[in-house]
Structures are given as C-alpha cells and as structure tokens.
Amino acid sequence: MDTQLKRGLLDICVLAAIKGQDTYGYLIIKNLKPYIKLSESTLYTILKRLETAGMLTVKTAEHGGRLRKYYHITDSGLKRIEEFKNEWKEILSIYNFVTKEDENNE
Image (cartoon, rainbow, N blue to C red):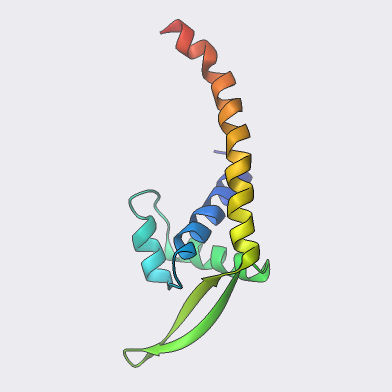
C-alpha cells in the first residue's frame, strides 16, 4: 500500500478511536486491534503528529501511582474525520472503476 495513503488511514483510525472519549495509548491499540495491527512506537508517532497538527490535545493524570497521558480529540480532529468520510466516497468510486473489469471476468 502507498505509504502516504496508509499514513493518512492510520491517522483517521487513531482519531476515530479517540472520538468517543478521552483515552490513552494502550486502550487505543486494544480498540483498534480487531481492525488493524498497530505497534506502540507507530501509535505514539501518530499521536505526536496529530497533537502537533492541533487535532488532539494531551493531558497527564495519575493512574495507579503512575502518570498516564490521556488524548482528547479537538474540533479540528473531528473535522478531519468528516473530511475523510467525504473523501472515502471518492476513493470507493475509484476502487469500483478499477475493479469493474475484474467483476465482468468472473
């Protein structure tokens, strides 16, 4: 898969995982596990990129005697998810065009 496309899709998946409620890294990975495999190092790179882009904010809170970072999606992050939904319609249209011949040959 194209690296840029995959990067964009992973960003959207992480934003969607945070959309419902503030959450932390381990829980994001756990919630995404049925859909995609994501390593901790990849996740934290994505989270930092999304924070820098203003799509999420981070707060630190103590949990079980340790500090834990909680991630919160911003309006900008929610807007990006909505933009993706509209873009996805175009991607599906392109996919249908590309695979049209395959369907005719089956």
